[in-house]
Length: 369
Image (cartoon, rainbow, N blue to C red; front, side, top):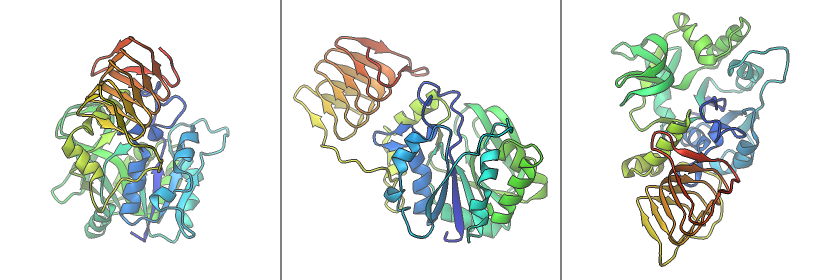
């Protein structure tokens, strides 16, 4: 993978995550107790041997910059190659939306590298993958472009690009849809191709008025290139809505999902290191099927929930089917169920808050209820 330059696209739409991603990138959302969504893309890159990675910064980039900094926690703080921040395109008369104008503005990052291939991925996906196998597949297929897909195991809503393939893995059709059925082949917004092919698609598409790399670029150029598809058979979640974020976090309570994502000995998921004291379980604490991060203090009951660093659960309080981000305080006698609390939320004594599994109640950052 030393011949590959990686680009992580942090341009996921926040339209369906407004309360949680109003002032932060979707990829900066806390995940599974101590991680951020972007950790998966960066870790997959470095675990696969990609040592030159560019991060396409979103409009709200402070949380991303604070979390990643020099990239040392992912072994990307290097004298040669390592991490490069790719800023958004400067404001201009170009009112086009989509990610293409930002890719175009940073195209020289790939073109001036000494790498042969570009690995372009969307940073809002949660999965653990070995990109070396994708590169080997690409070389064996003789294709111009290789895209990664997942066979959907249940009906899903939301904008998705699906593909049809021949028995040898060559893509025969690409289509947009607002939902997919079980068994469909959904593109994971991850593509491997030679640098000249990437540059040609970006430049020719943008200069002809295109907005979106996948829709206007790859799909509309599909007749010009041989495209193959590599299937990822493991767990995948795309964080593109509140429901998807809630479900993906709770999926981590499944030991099989947790083991696949976080317990691969040769593919660990790295994150920003923070020194915290161990969890304090007091004599009145009762915890069942939950992820509890360091620095938490538990005096009440916690069930089927994810608690991030520094959360306090008071005596007689009940936390059920909840996601509590850093430094939340659930005071004595309070009860929260099917709820997502952003950072620094205080639920005062004896308050009860309840959402539903398909529509969790969201408490915004720094709120006191």
